[in-house]
Image (tube, rainbow, N blue to C red; front, side, top):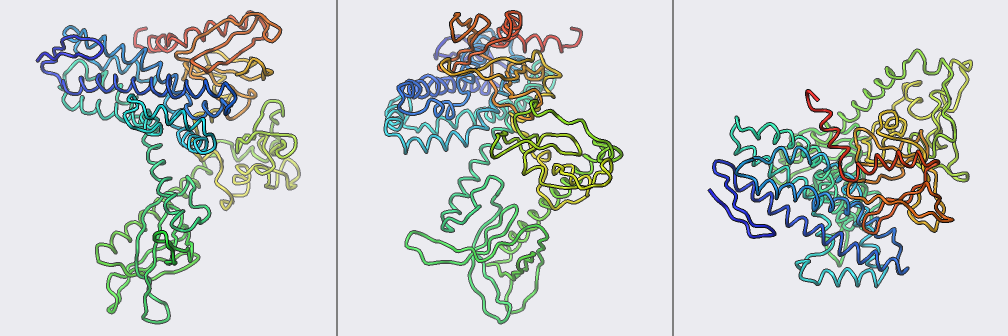
Length: 569
């Protein structure tokens, strides 16, 4: 079978015996995707950045909206798409794509930063379209152009979130049609594993966005009920149902909204703008029980009991009753599993810290100047409202909120001492306080500086600024071995969270001309309108950083790492 392409470049593609449709679809969708990335990076972002340069609105707003879309555009337009087009032009002699994807798929990790920032980007976009007439006018003007296809900026910004799951789907279909003994199977399966991990972040972001949208609808339906629009709230089930009175045989129609952590028992209220309800009672899922009941006068009944309230309910049918009971049972089960996991995690911490030592031996205190943020909640310190405190059990530097616990320490004659909440759990065995930060899933910035510095390509202090007219800030810079295309910037070597990350792929590395503002040990990283200025302590340190960064911006460090990891290398 010979196929001919007419877009961008023309060549014949002999894909006889191979899943041709998926190979063609991958290339065609990649070309269309690069066009959309160009629209985001070089049109929307560039136009808004130019206007921000005039002082109409802050340039930080534009950076906050578009995040690292420039790096994503560079990767796809200069690496992935050319690699696919070259391979397709050589298909007769090299009929496979698995090796190309396996080599480039690790770069998809840069999507984690974009996906994590997506909710914040949507909020900023909505806020400034309402606040700034010029900001809104630029977006409306671009959206009216033919290149936008009558779609909004928000729609186009969702494409990078959806793209990685799209790769996963195409590759799965490709593998289904690929013979078991095909030479491409091994590399294709390897790339699928890498892409699936990256897709998890995107799928989570999509679900989170859909959930938040639903929470907003419920928030409005309840007349602005507090604490509803919270990312930790997950809607499980909602709907109308009858509540049986406890004292007589009457019943009333109510509206139930079941979340992962609570049940809202709501009653109708008068409204001229659609159906509205008032929350009568909140029932926590913790300790909740659901029981099927039997009532000759009222069929399809069941009972939900919690610490705050017990409700006897009547569903509209037997199927409706089963659906509600299953929803409650699953929610209770998941809640209990998470609670048990939390308890087990606390016991594991006991083993790691060693029960024999904690509280019996005075710890080594982390010095104040080694951290710029609380080592538990990661909030930055300041001299007025968030000062530094030391946990007397582990020696960590924490804020007043995270050190608002006391426990007896044997090394201090069993006197009560200020400790962090994690050590409080260990020393007292109490489980009624807030869940420790260590039990939460880490974000892309929440990697401890000490952890990556000990296993890095290069690390050390540099002066950093994004505006040459403003003074530089001394930061601890790390390029980790496990993420050699990203530069992490920390406030101090012991910080538990990075201030920011710079995906190096596609950046230009430039020497800064000597001036009063920038000594000869300065250099800068530039990509589109994004510029980072750095100054090293010595010329030798500067050359060391330039040597590593120059390889990272073209992906050479990662390719070297791949070659190093190959068997026999």
